[in-house]
Image (tube, rainbow, N blue to C red):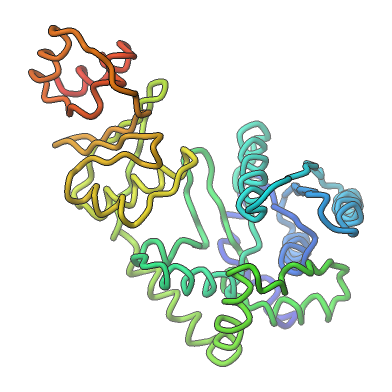
Length: 336
């Protein structure tokens, strides 16, 4: 990444629209993206999460504030202490919640993350070993439209080595997270043993392949738009079962659950499934419904007869009986 290629950020035209929020850790990638945005006169603020886990955590938070002040940007900080197991998952949930709240209240156009080509290959390889399909393997996209905002990843075509060379050339201060070398984490093992050697040997070919794969994925999955009334979520079914299952999987993750491979297979065959003992997913002819599971409840004869008349799946009737308003919503959909 030489100086002549500095403006080569993805979606530069979009970055010049409105104002963006940069998820800023102070590490290699986010520091490079910070300075590239400055060089390209992109309007943005930064958001930093201090997990208070390392001796340098407070220094990193102070560095974020100092950089923001130097360039007349706003620095939005969040400090937390996450105890217990599975720190990576809880840290991811914590920062995602923080960023989402800022996007909703801060009038930002885009959320920017500093994912790069190595990250993308790591993700693909990890998904491949878990038995995922192409849409899941392509989960890290340069433009990712969420329900309430859009994520841009302007560095996604650059390698980690290129980014480090840029920082070294321009003497930009940054921090190194020692946990990135800890092979107890699956991602780090993939990085050391697979993705880094492949990127260093085949970077240009991998860049082209991801470009073609992005093009292949366009239109492959129809977007599923879930609406909700209280705890009842519903969406009109797309044309293909693959699109439907992909959309359900994303919605279930938003609700804080991850569908197992077995649950997905059951849902394919039976058209209903209990997910994580918390939610019931029911695929009907025209709509898919997601609702909390309700213990066995005694329903009156009139209600059961109405459900049969409107062909409401038996597995979701318990929740509807406990929520008359949600029952009214489903009846209205059935009458359309």
